[in-house]
Length: 71
Image 1 (tube, one colour):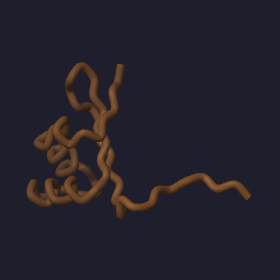
Image 2 (image 1 turned 60 degrees about the vertical axis):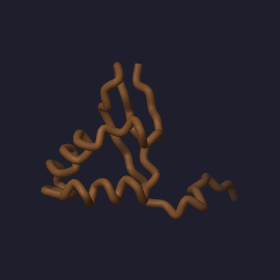
Image 3 (image 1 turned 90 degrees about the horizontal axis):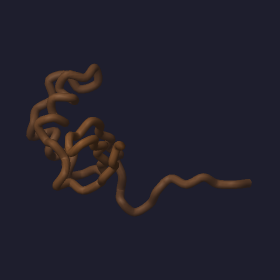
């Protein structure tokens, strides 16, 4: 089972940094910059058996959220 959580206390900072630093979109990104980005974003972690296996980050103003709109 995979558990999703937005609780920052559960985020595995070193793991998230390693994922980002080795990605095509942010190669070599500095750890302090990742930490600052996490603090200013809405983040979600995915966990299996207590280990973080995924991560998503949305840049937001924390005031409005996207919603489906019907005509």
